[in-house]
Amino acid sequence: MTGTVLSDDEIHQRIVDAIVDQRLLPGTKLVEDKLGQVFGVSRTRIRQVLIRLAQEQVVVLQPNKGASVARPTVTEAREVFEARTLVEAVLVRRFAAGATTADLQALAQCVKSEETARRQGDAATALRQSGRFHLLLAEAAGHQTFSRFLHKLVSRTSLILMSHGPADVQPTTSRAARWVQVCRCEEHRGLLAALRTARRSRKPVDVERAVALMTRHLAQIEAGLEWSTPEARPSDWMSQLSDMA
Image (cartoon, rainbow, N blue to C red; front, side, top):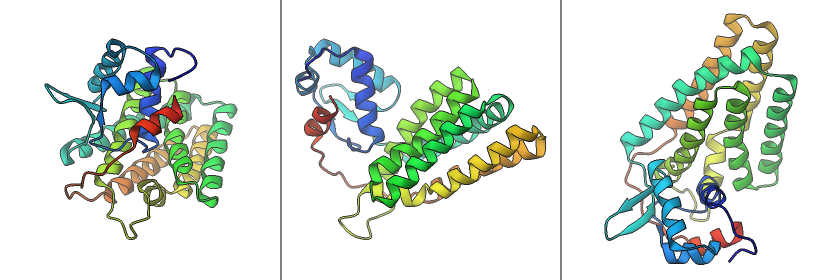
């Protein structure tokens, strides 16, 4: 139980963070009573948060079965990457047109943090910074609707990576460790360089080069997916959420 009472938005964000960080696995059952104990709130409030997560397609609600973390199908996964490709192309163009020096510095710091985490073998932090790079770009682009949409798509992307990631080469290799190899930070550094050039020159050819790099980056992540049916894996979600709460 938490020392202070969290708002519904805070509870929602902690559950989303646990999914993005790959602490909550696809198929994990989310029991209202236990969630209430973790966050120190009533079942009624937990139910409202779960309904919101279900509307965002992060959680699945089934009659008489309760809630569980969503496990995206192959079709849903492909749709998410298609949506991200369309959305992030617009965001790159908006970023090039109006980003500030501070925005570029924020992206550079994010890439640096990702690289540091990789060198230290901190796969979870590296993966989190990888997703944050895209979200920072969206926020700086100044498109509020697409920025909110991308937050949801990034959460679903994390579920896709867990559900359809490549098979283990070694049993001890974590999903996060495998996927930081797929979403490589040198691609983010290349994107950053292209964004700097596009913002400085404002030439269509430079802007479209940055768009092409983003499109290729997303396509390469999608190409690394495996479409076999994933095996269910246990998750000690109570301790994971308790740490975050």
